[in-house]
Amino acid sequence: MQKNPDFNKMWGLSNTGQSVAGSVGTNGIDINILPAWEITRGNKNVVVAIIDSGVDYNHPDLISNIMVSKDKARDFLGEDSISEDRGAHGTHIAGIIAAAGNKKGMIGVAPQILLLPVRVDLWKEDSLLRAEAINYITHCAINDPERNYIINCSWKMSAHCKHVHDAICNAIDKNLLVISGAGNENSNIDESLFYPAAYPEVISVAAIDQNGKKGQFSNYGKTVDVVAPGVHIFSTHINNGYKFNDGTSMAAAYVSGVSALIWSKNTCLSNIEVRALLENNCKSIDKYNQEYIGLLGHGLVDAYMSLTHIHQFKTV
Image 1 (cartoon, helix red, strand yellow):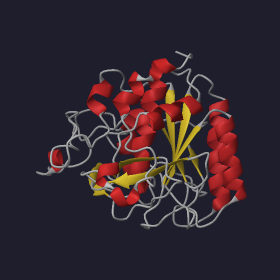
Image 2 (tube, one colour):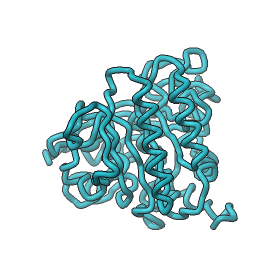
Image 3 (cartoon, rainbow, N blue to C red):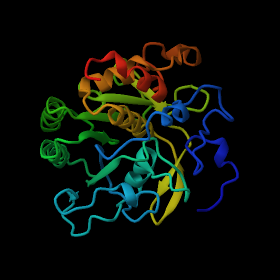
Image 4 (cartoon, one colour):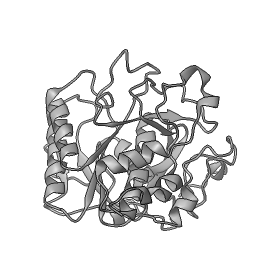
């Protein structure tokens, strides 16, 4: 790993497990991960499926947590190899969610869960294949009843697609959780709908910076459900590397990781209960975003508070 002298002052998590969001930003503007890790770091009964450009299967921070088997790994590009990331986006998302914390580079939000990469073409808006990818993951979940599945959709569609919406509704009906970034056009997505984030069944995530302010690029609106870090995010990169990126894609990955921790603590929770724990235990960021009050959902996800309120549900 190339050393970055500013790394421990940026968003993300260092290879020692130190939270770095609050060190140069506003105090308390982080996902409260260190006390959450005293409760759980995840377990292999939770899978986050990443519909994306692929994942670098051989990255030292990811290899131990990737589900690689002939009956699980899936490529929707029609290629033989599934071990390459065709664009590096998916590898960055994977690290945020579940880099293993092996002291080789960085650590993800839920470093002991499983990742299921499902590769699509992010730059060719083939909605039918994306619907097929969602249906495939739902099929995996149905045939793997001991585990709970989360689908991370850090991508966009320019218009409503019935096939994708039907696939999402079917996934929710089968107790999966679907999470998507709200988009990077600095637009109100209530007026200019951004899919799949605009679907009510999906947890829509906007991005904030280190001071709690909406990322300059991040979309907003009443359709947004929660916010998470999305500015200057450090994570894994192809060819065993690391990189900083911005985007609601990164924010969605944080929320997928926190959701995975909640389900790891209690695998008997329903997807509706996991969503409630996420949304009802957020930190308010209204004072940093006066012009966006009511347009950034419930606020900043808080891993620790979400975990400590699981007892509210009778399934515990």
